[in-house]
Image 1 (cartoon, rainbow, N blue to C red):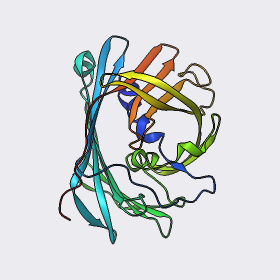
Image 2 (image 1 turned 90 degrees about the vertical axis):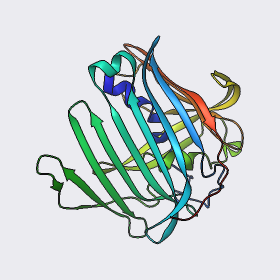
Image 3 (image 1 turned 30 degrees about the horizontal axis):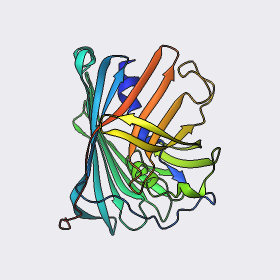
Image 4 (image 1 turned 180 degrees about the vertical axis):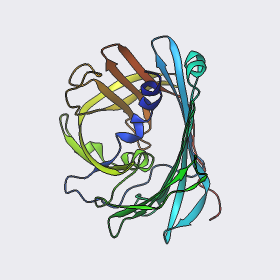
Length: 269
């Protein structure tokens, strides 16, 4: 349960591996800027369980021959959950500023005694990924592994920002979105539905919001057809505001707690 609650806040980017209906990415309209920072908290009932911060570096980086944004997510357990299993995770992605697809990503995971350090290089043109993982027992990097993947594949971090470029004005309630996501050693294809619009209350005030729900297979964890819902600001920024997951053991919620707009200033790195 502790790990499930922490990773639910990553549903925000996980739900963002969306493609247009043809399966090919269009040139995205960027609605965020360097220096932007968004913070969230995860809570189970009245208990705070975790918190996370998503930050776009104020510098640009050259990776894979592309000029890239560097985006990093820091997540950690809090409160009583931090007593039972201390979690300090870091996820990062270098995202092509033109096509908004990742060129490289990384994970540095610290969960109790568990450790993982992974670097993924993504060859979008040849639809391949090169995965390098550190062996903590032998204190050296394992041999690289190469995998086939899909066209315009996203990762957990980059997809979050690609989601914010979509034109929801062209969608009616019930519209289905699809996604291709590479994670660990596989490419996953998922579907989700645009449910419509409503007003959502957050710590930062009330917002007009877009509502999205993934199409979940039958399982013993989540309760109901639309068990997971995501609320995204219905404006030019498309900021994920809230996630609610209805489970058979109760509801877990992820709420925005702070937002700092970037200034889009900085130097290439």
